Image 1 (tube, rainbow, N blue to C red):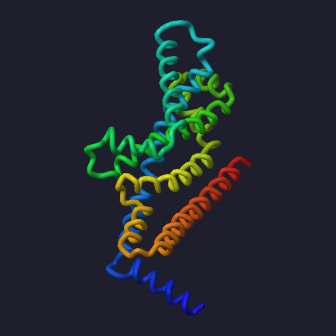
Image 2 (image 1 turned 90 degrees about the vertical axis):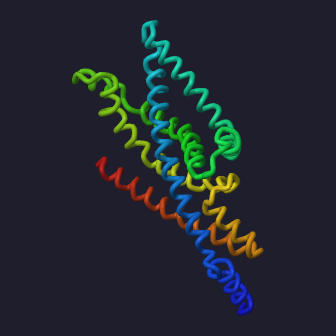
Image 3 (image 1 turned 135 degrees about the vertical axis):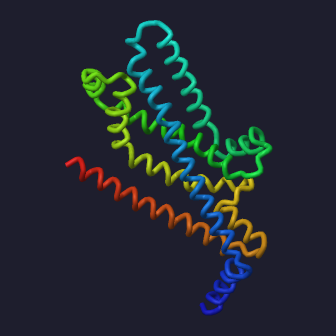
Length: 242
């Protein structure tokens, strides 16, 4: 047992203390958090627009008169459906490889590319979450907004969307947790994220277990922390409904 402890201590010092190699981990951790945060904000923005278009089409297409408005709404719904099908039907690993090596092949910094890729990917899943929330809002809420003199956009913005977001907020928070773990594939396009930091230390020290376990422990700690926040959020929302 003593020999095992001494070996673990030696590996830890070699991997993280010697030559300040812990900087690889802290830099990677910062990039991982930045990518996940920006991506989830971008995903919420994209997802909200897509959800509004799709839910508006689902609720009104059957009763709308033929004309430019119905054509544009149908076209927007078709584009959204293609976007959802393509993004949710292909692995995020392939998406980030296409973005980095094909679309942004001249990019020198992979962090913005990763933010955009994960944001677009997250938007497809967020769209369905928010659309479910919008469809769950009683249609009488829309009628009440119109009776108050609001137009369609104002009714959606001030009445429907806030109610929908409140009901799906825990699901959106869980989407952030899933996205945080998915960012680990960004290391394959030379993004210095947390996983890449561990890979760099492995390649320098030739020690396999210690960097991997530390990276795994950090991901686990972040997931547990954000899961705790999600639980607190759910309790707060439940208490506000009483």
